[in-house]
Each structure stands twice: as structure tokens, then as C-alpha cells.
Length: 454
Image 1 (cartoon, rainbow, N blue to C red):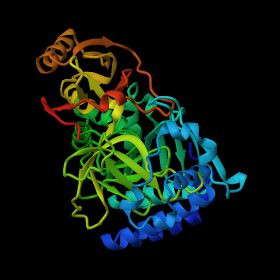
Image 2: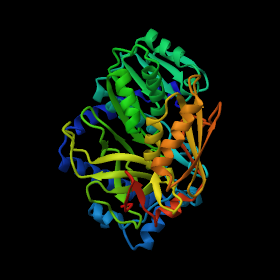
Image 3: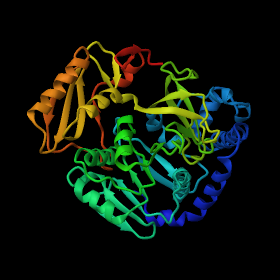
Image 4: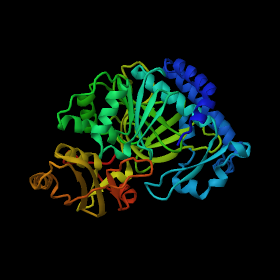
């Protein structure tokens, strides 16, 4: 959890980064690419001279940083994976940083064994806050605006007068939706920051219970989970405001965000390089094709992530947005590789399709979660409200069988609680099959037709 004292102490650096971002977001593509390339060269020289792992990589390839004249040359460097980081943690640490600058971070391990790495104390929070601020300004946000935050914390609510922010825990929202709505109305915020699943649940509740909509919200900022199209529809209908999403990851090596004109993800070239690769390691460059996001954090000198395979999938686009920013775009980020379901005949269907179905048939369901342990068999856990009946259960099962009986057998169980992560993020799927291995060979089914994965 980010401490307020860390945020305040980094304010001067935040302000400088933000000032630079306001200028660079207006640059043309050529100037952005030149700036990005200079940052990359700086990172590569530093890594070669100060990071044992990368010094060895360069020497094995008989390369020097001066040989990297373009992004094409840069792609001669091999991919970095979670497994490599776990085996070489000590060798990826930069030698030229004082001990007090190293801050150990550990991912939640939702996709396997937790990953430990280092970030630069002080610097990362300044970057984090500045990029979040420039993202939020796309909706007209400024520090004087009152804001509600619905994220993961143990305490149900907490007010931060310095930031004019009321924090509400996402952990309790399904049990006390009326209380949360009352608190939002009473606080009268201009903006809401939330996990998508939390604000989508609240939106769905407002619509289904025919509650008066919450007015005067100027924008809702989502992060931390995949944002699905059906969630966007619930939120838009309940709050009638702009919805913005920001994508990043715990390793602090990528930031991309939607804007005031579209739901496309604009990659911040001042922060990172993003490549999309297919399951054979080739660059994806065809409009609408899916690829895995491979990222290089241009400011992570203390523990460089260079050509790091994130396990997240995105849809390639060569277009630019009408907002005028000439940033590279990922049309959508569709989640992690392990968010695929394996059918009876071994094909892959992304969770998005099944979630869309459940959302459309989820009358009186407050929350759900799928689990898969065997090919073609799904377990659906549901938390229901008091209006849920046996007829609702039969309807869901019958409609599912009409659409997906050739792919899956579905078992539905009503429960009182669904396990969440320590940060109260909601996982729609607990996948226990080795999807990453199947991913290299199989296909995705989309809209009930079969498509090559790439």
C-alpha cells in the first residue's frame, strides 16, 4: 500500500514529470520515437555496464549497446520471463545503486508463484503519481476535486482530507451496497476511482433495484482488473459519465490508458516500449490480431525489465486516436493468457465470452466466479440476492447449454462468499489447467466461430 508520506515526499519530482508529460503528449510521432530511443539507449548502456545478467546476455550475442541502432536491432535481445527473473534476481540488480535505494516488491502470485524484484525507492512513486495524474486530467480532474476511491483496504472507509478523497473498501461492497450509495451521495464527489468489478456491481445494483442514479459524477477511473464491455455498459447507464481505464502491472514497466475520445489503450512512449508477439515469438503487426504484450520499462534502471513477457494479451492497431496524441495504440487489452477456458475438445475460449453470457443472464446474481480443473467442465459459484429463485437457476443453465453445451458442462453452486485476493480484487476465473502450455498450440473460439490465436 502506498504511504501518504511517500506521496508527499515525492511531490517535487511528480510535478517535474507531470510538466514534461504535458509537453510530450503534444509531440508528433517522430519526436516521440526519438525521445524513446534515447531513453532506451541510456537503459541499455546502463544495463550492460552495471547489471551482470545483461552484461552476460550482450557478450553471449557478441553485441554492444552501440550496435542497437533501431528497434529492429533491439529485438536481437532475448525475451525476459518470470522464470528467468526468479532464477536471476541477484544478477538483475544494478550494482551502482546504494543499498538504501532498493525497495523489494512482490507480486500477488495469482498466476503462479509470487515474483520478487526491486524498484527504486522514491522514484517509482513519483512516476506512478505523475502518470496517473496526466491520465486523470483527460477527464478534467484537478486536485481540488472531491474523489471517492473504491479499492482494496481492510477498513471499510477512511477519509484523507489532504487529497479530498474518501476511501471505501471494495471488500464489503456486495454486502452493503445501500450504505455505499448513501456515502457516495453524501460525499458528493466529482470523480470515482475503482476496481471495475466493484463499480460495475454497484452500477448493476442501482439499475436492477431502480434506484435514483447518482448525478454530477464527471468521470470514473478504473484500474487493477480487466475492464469488460458489459461492465462499461452498466457503469455508463448508472452514472452517465465518462469511463477511463489505465493498464499497468506490478513490475512497474508499462503504462497505457484510454482517453476522452475512445476506449483504445494509448501506450505512454515516455515510460515504456511495448511489443506484441505471437505464440512463436514473431512481431504482430496486422490490424486486429492478438498478441502477448512484451514490455521494456525505460525508467527501471535499478532492476531492468527488458523485453519482458507480461502474460497479458492485447489487440494490435496501427491507428491513431482522434484525441490528437500520437501515441502507439493497443485496441484492447483482453486479459492474461491464463484467462482462457479449455473446451471438451481442447480448444480455447476466452473468459470474456463466458463472462458476457453470465452478465446478460445474471438477474439477481450479486457476484460470480468460475473454476476449471478439467477440460470441458466448469464450476460456477454465485452469490445471489433474496429475489433469486430456482427459476433463475434453471434459466441460466438452460441458456448456457443452448450456447455452449458442445464446449462445456456447467455446474452451478450458490455460496455466501467468494475468495478474493489480499487487495480485494475480484478474479472471475480460477484456472487450474496449464493454459500457458496449451496456448502455444491451440485456437480461440470467438462469437461461436473458430479463429487462429494470432
